[in-house]
Image (cartoon, rainbow, N blue to C red; front, side, top):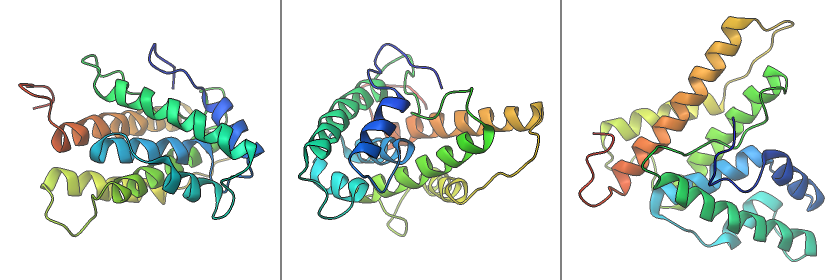
Length: 189
């Protein structure tokens, strides 16, 4: 997924920061968690997110503080992207040059993180949600449990990955509009 003007942190930078901090989670999951919390209700406190991503008791080191700073910046980027009238929201995933299995695993982790972020933001399955939201949450759950194994992926596999990633991206925009409609906006209706 390519960066746009409102993205200031790359997948590789966040992945490296999380690894240095000894994180239990990777960049895709971290971005998913942040995207889920922002979609659910705006900017969230980073302390519970840090504890989830870095592991309990691993949030006080200098490396953890660097991650916290990076996640704060990323959260601000996500807010700007979700409010972009040009649908500028991007998923923070490995670059297209990465193996399809790596990108598929990252997309799966991103969706799992997003659902966790929604739950942190108070949006849970089982509460009274519009049908569209329930369907998207179910789809994200299915994607979060998806795997991919193939000796030699072909063009059809690449196309399927791109289509699923775009479905995820557009679904996030749809959910954000459902949960936090812009005043007077007719977008995504």
